[in-house]
Length: 93
Image (cartoon, rainbow, N blue to C red):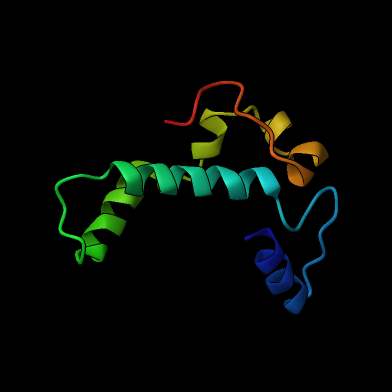
């Protein structure tokens, strides 16, 4: 995932710096949230993807979702941008 996002960014002229571009922790955070959601979503027909996406967005679509798990300072740090940082305020459920 990392490599593909970085290639897409490069194709659009977006450079990865300590303050912008690809962000490892945010990418992996949302990958974990989505994977956990899909693994635990029960009672829904396999083909009903529109309903699954709607439910995902209702549950996890808040713009500030990562900030429920990280302080802004930690999440926006150069270290969290470059490497996965475990949530320190709240576990990812």
